[in-house]
Length: 196
Image 1 (cartoon, helix red, strand yellow):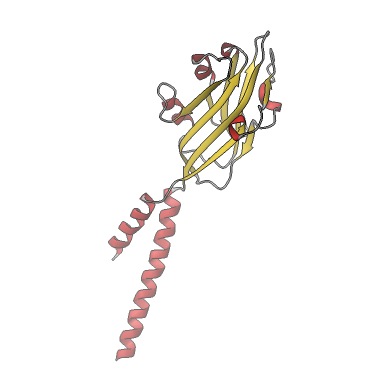
Image 2 (cartoon, rainbow, N blue to C red; image 1 turned 90 degrees about the horizontal axis):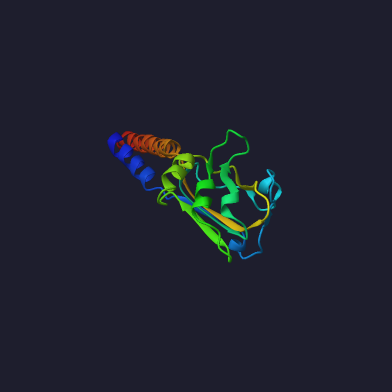
């Protein structure tokens, strides 16, 4: 019986559905551009509305992530940027500079997309954020430290897929199964005593 309960618990943990949520801002959410990245400045997008948000209600461990953002009007080689999870300088982050430099901006705006499966950049992206708790502050940051043109951040989106910690789920399943087993045994013993 105990083996059956353990197998049941492991099956439930393995089949537990992932939770996916899409966060969108600016033109990607059907609105207007978020604003220009300050030219020739280290302040960057830190003061711009819509470049940071707090995620909540997700599972406790990231299993997949898709980041999309649209830049327009400047020179991509002037820019550097990152996606950070958390609010401290030691928080995990992914440096977007190489991705931006690899795809020059075009006049109508360039859409950059990054997922765990993305060739070249994907494995580093996954290493930086896979397994982290997504229920925290997410920040997309860009800075342009070269003068003469301004880049606009039109919009960005982040799709987070997360699952609960397997240990917590397994403990919950085991606890319910244990209480159920004890209840069934007591019921059976009560029936045997009553039958005598």
